[in-house]
Length: 407
Image 1 (cartoon, rainbow, N blue to C red):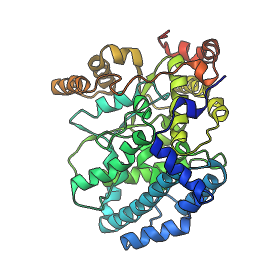
Image 2: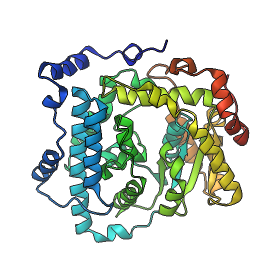
Image 3: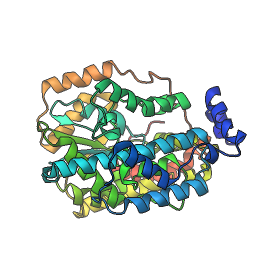
């Protein structure tokens, strides 16, 4: 019998007590409101601004639909509603600050995003550590957690800005300590693009946070916002190559190339027997942060579909339907010799690989030992699969890319 989320990830006492406060007043919604009109007014009064911009279409319609779905389906508890409220309000303020800056500096929209290096692949296939290592290149730039949360800083004090970012990232492991074994969170780390896309209110991140079955991410709006975000972040800065990352780019590669035609895609690969249960536990954990009910059956239903997509992507590459701008990087190769693996990727891209960058990679890894927050333990059976089922349903992917098995 599958364990419940409460058995898998028991909550700290303070989280349980805060959530029960909602019961004491007849429901968490009475304690923490997600009323969109109220939040829009708060964003305006707290900034003294009123123009939310129109560079990504109907943001208000997307926000209304998102919150409606949250209220109807997500069953958010008090902590969950507080997190969502803060994120929505921060994102509204971000839109106001970004729009003001665009009016002040219209040349921002003339910035060219040259040949970004984009890490994507099945979740839990080594994308995060690869992204962090690529970000160590002094000729590159990535989106930091501070950048994503506050692209136009509302304060001039760097320490206060860091604390304002930490309140979101470090709080994750306060609410659910086991999450640190799954994915390290920190204001000092680079983050996935879906964090930066959140103010579009079409970003995939909102779907990860809450069960919203009748709301879908708007990838076109998200990418429109993403480009303006990058243009704003690099405006007036020294030249550097963007390094970006999210597995969410996999199903929208055509849109990615339409937005950044000269992008390089670094596609990671790992044994599905490892990535599927790890990925499911990650998504379930994200939802458990904010709700007392997590629909494991619905989460599990899409567990192996990504591998059919990966095979389809390779077929399109061979037919020339996608640009010949892919680098395939296997998890086992990356783990055996990270410097050699990344140097090989650079050779494929046609980018110089400096000796000081190799030293940076080794130093970063020396200060980030594996499992420093404990080991993330997962087995297929924990999520309703058998090893044989996973092997059968992902065999085409394993054979197509020559993926090494880890069992």
